Length: 558
Image 1 (tube, rainbow, N blue to C red):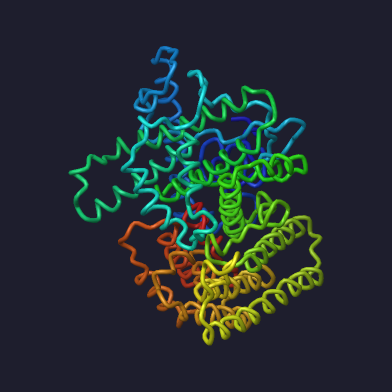
Image 2 (cartoon, rainbow, N blue to C red):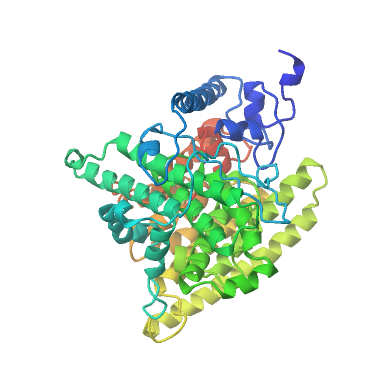
């Protein structure tokens, strides 16, 4: 092998594999193409010790590469074996022939006219969609025809799955309730199939829990076919948009955004930790186009249903975008442009329980972290400037927490206004409690960014303690499932006396029930963080990112 095939300055994954690395950011192209975790370019990972842990990581990556390569070969073989057929309608034949665990769709999007964006992966989005997108079938209408609707799974999604995904989303009767959701599900074919695939996985989890799955035929192969159908429909939809050779409409932007947000939820529920970043970066590409000034007239003509969908799914992408940064070490893909008043204000507390001010300050900490890492690499970091920037963020967090406490005190003495009585409902007691938990854990995050992951530091001790107090104030411990990020950030910085508290929260979260999100993956990250500190007994800092890298994971803490 020539020396040019080896990377000396590339990502740690390519260096471990002794492969050439293009050093793309936030992840390199080689890791992205192979659907393996890119360990990026920061300090040397804990597992790279030249001993057992490094060998274990190399074997894990080798198996993942082998699996991805074999999957691509199987798909290529199936395509060569299948004669090209022309079809005037939609059938399930293509989906039935897909592999049980298909490769995810190429979610790089065709650019709008006169637009050139970064695709979030170190490359550029092209005017045409990726050649991985299937274009075998002629396309006419992407509405779901009545004969195709699986009423049982659709209602399971609406009645059981969506409320679990977004327990805080309870629009008023005056606002039209969730009617817009049924409308967009039945008029956007790839979204519909992603939703019923998600419903099928959830229903199987429930039936397995009750030992009744045999009576319903929800085997893994049929689930795989439904998942493949969802991916196939999205490929075809993106191909249809790309074939127009003209700018996407706002309706198309909203429909693609909703599909990608749904696929992220589907990947999380399936337990696949590799594909969510690809879907999220693709979704983030849409936001600048949605907000262009030229879209104002188009926005005014949108139906109320599509406006609701726009605000809702923009908020979901913003939520995922912000909280992904603490584990990836990268700045937000979209810079959270979806959360401002340009076309209307997205209220995150109505979607995920935490008010905008706290989430946007978490975003500011992520930008500060990225700024610090970049300057450290070039040996230009000014500690004075770092402290100045951090102090500004800390002051705003403390001001927000004081205001939050004042409002909590007022709510204990006054009844809540009726949901029908005002246009925008006042934050509920629960939302204020959850916002306080996020804000206190954000202070822990800020302390680690500025001073390092040293749990014994006084400011970290104080803010972990404040987070624990805020968690104890929750009226229902089951709500901890909605607090994965805060739980993980504070838990990783807990000292020995506090560890039983965090273990106890995991036990009280109803872990046997099928839930959405990655809460069940948070405790292993926390335990790994504690283990690394305990075993190595060193002065090197160990935080959640260190633990995630040590475990070889790529997890979205939602």
